[in-house]
Every structure is written in C-alpha cells, then in structure tokens.
Image 1 (cartoon, rainbow, N blue to C red):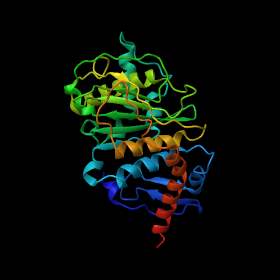
Image 2 (image 1 turned 180 degrees about the vertical axis):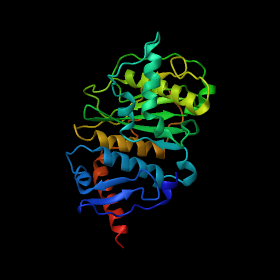
Image 3 (image 1 turned 90 degrees about the horizontal axis):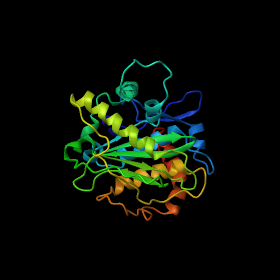
Image 4 (image 1 turned 135 degrees about the vertical axis):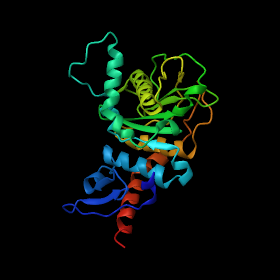
Length: 288
C-alpha cells in the first residue's frame, strides 16, 4: 500500500495525458488522459481507466492508513483474464474442471504478487460484461476456518446484489452488485462458481494447503440496493457502491437486507462532476 502516500505525477504525452495515479515510485500507476476525462460527460459510459482510478483513489485517500491495508482493489481487467476462454487443448484427465481451475488461476497468479488476499477484509473486483459494469466484493477470505457449512441457495431471480456468506461471525463471502435491474446481462451463478474456485487455488499457492471454498462453505442471498434509471450510469453506480461500502460496511447479513436507502439518486447524479473536478484538481496541484 506504499502508493497511498504519494500525490499524482503530472506528465505530458502528445499533450493528452493529465495525471498518473498513483505516481512513481509506486508501481502500476494509472495514466488519465483527456479522452478518459471526456467519458465523464453525461450520457457516456465510464471506461476502465476511470473505474480503476477512482477505486484506487477511494481506498488510498479516503481511508485511514491502518484501514487501507484491509482492502485490495483488482484491476478491471482481472476478471476478464481469469475467465477468458482458452482454446488450447488441456491435458487429458478424469477431472477436467480441476485442470481448468488451475489453468485459470495460472493466468492471474502474478496479479497478487506481494499480496496475501487472506489477510484482507474486503477485495473489490470490478467486472465489465457485455458493455455493462458489475462489482464483486470478496469478504473475509481468511476467515475460512470459521465457516459452519451452510448450503447454497439460489432461486434464479434477478437481484441487484447477491451475497455468498454466513451471518456471524464473519466468514468468506462473495457479493455481486449490478446497478441494472430490467435486463439480465450477467449470470450471477457464474460468479458464484468462479470466485470460490479462484480462492481455492490462491489458498493453495499462498497457504500451502488444500481448502475448499465451495458449496457448504458459503450461503447466498440478495439484498436490495439503488438501481440506475438509464443505460449509461452502471459504472457510476459501481463506484458509488464501493464508496458507500467503505463508509459503512455491512455488519450483519440476512435474506431481507434492504440497502435501497444506501444513497440517493441525487448523489449518483453528482458523481460524474465530482470525479471530473477531482482529476482536474490533481492536475492543477502538480502545476503549482
């Protein structure tokens, strides 16, 4: 988390770049250009640069130093790399799903170099599927030893947020946030199968032992959250979900959770302007 302690660095590449966040010597700085800034205009879809920038900013700048270490933010490309189809022939085996699971993890194993996810409380995974933004939040992955073996329950209905978790004490869980409610772009069951399998392989690498994160370890239900009222604000809602989550993380989990009052539509409508002003402010600060 050393990159949390630095201000953005102003750079110019062909007159288009505005800032890099976080700046050197931090690794993985995100370059924000004028084109990226333009996608914050009303009616435009947010791109991966703005999503990645603001998520990282929220964790670094909005949280106390001791709290920041509890969070990890994956790049918006992580889930795509993890789940992309591979047309290469896999080795013959009686358990093909196990080979696929290992192969998928091998594609992204370097993404957590120097990071132990099982020491984190919350892991944010932005997802883009069919031009729509979603958010997965993996919670308490290191609490696996406390799981009590509840069954997985999915009723096939469409929800804006879907949880895989136990109630108390906190146990590993996976949350699926979608701002879109009228049309199903993404099947939550896919997320429910991918996240536990990824964690299982990550545990094997980081902890050196076998540990299941599958059915019987995680329970599933779906609280209600604010939803977008247009086609283009899914990215804005994703960012607001994270911001609200960081300010007030859920303390209890149950089937009838209603988070519809988490934030207002007015708050979301102001978010584009606020992020744009933030980027321009960071730009000006480096010019002084």
